[in-house]
Image (cartoon, rainbow, N blue to C red; front, side, top):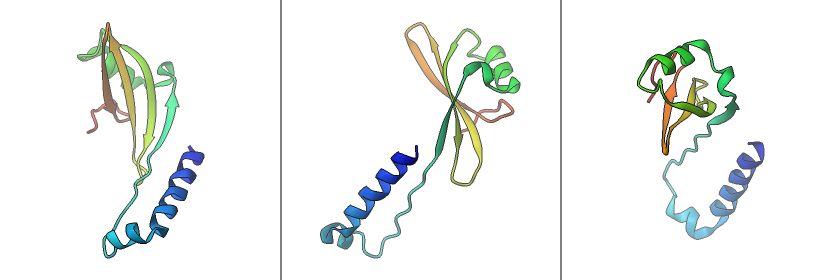
Length: 101
């Protein structure tokens, strides 16, 4: 993850050093938001999330991947990838099992 951030910063510096790029953004505020994404084993998800998935519309779906996402404001949520047959879906839930947009 650190290598990705460093590469993005280096790329940004190269672009900003370019006169045509710098002039096109002169006077504009450009902000970069970096989210931290950490893989979580499905069996290690918090119990409220497991309960939400088991009782809800995704009860018959299989959790294939899960990630803990930390936003720039330090709030966190879980991004969960589920699969049923050939259909896949992504669900974002907070630590209490509530949907997050």
